[in-house]
Amino acid sequence: MKAEGTNETPDTAPVQPKPAPEPAPAPAQPEKPQMGRVRRLWRSLLIGLAVVAVAFLAGLLACYLLRYKPLTVTLAQTQTELAQLNETIGDLQSEVESLNAKLQEANDKIARLEGEKQALQEELDTAKAHPELLRVLVDVSNARLALFLDDVEGAKTALAGTADRFSNLHDRIAAYDANLAQSMPQRLNLIINGLDTDPETARVDLELLTKNLLDVENALFSK
Image 1 (tube, one colour):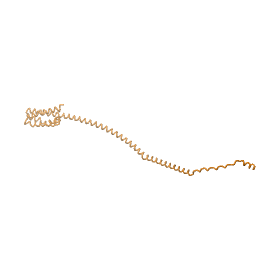
Image 2: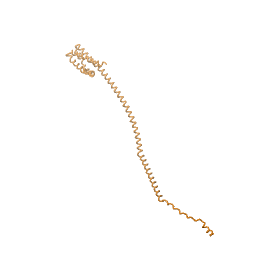
Image 3: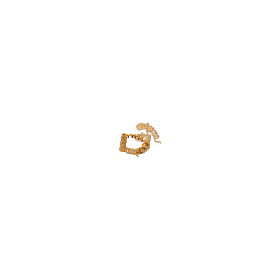
Image 4: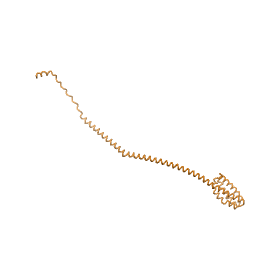
């Protein structure tokens, strides 16, 4: 059996030696710990940034709540008060305008009444002055009649109150003719003073005085 086996050995193919396996590249052991540190660093940085951002936002929120929100509320209240104040001012301005209109109306009425009062006063003065002037004419006419009858004392009596009547009529006569307002009382004095010494001249002066009085009466009271 061994002999047979010995004889068959040469017929067997020679055994090829196996190539030695190539050594596997060694893993970069140092890089793994470096990448881990970078990640941890970035993670810590991101966490820190997140904390800072949260703190910043919290600060902004607190600042808004503690400072700006009250200011906003105050501003809103101020704007409301300002609007109410403007409305009140508008109401007051409208009231003032209404009062001014009423005041103007009252002033116009007063001016109208003053005008009417002045017109009535002038009518009253005229109504008083006309009879006074007629009394002067009566006095002068009575004096002329007395002199015609050679009654000097009667003429003096007739002219006794004429000077006062001329004084009452002075302004009215002066409005018509200032010279007459001054000359007629002077003529009256000459007449009274000359009744005893020169009644004829007094009679002529009485005629001239009568003419002047009629001119005044016609100018002031003929309307």
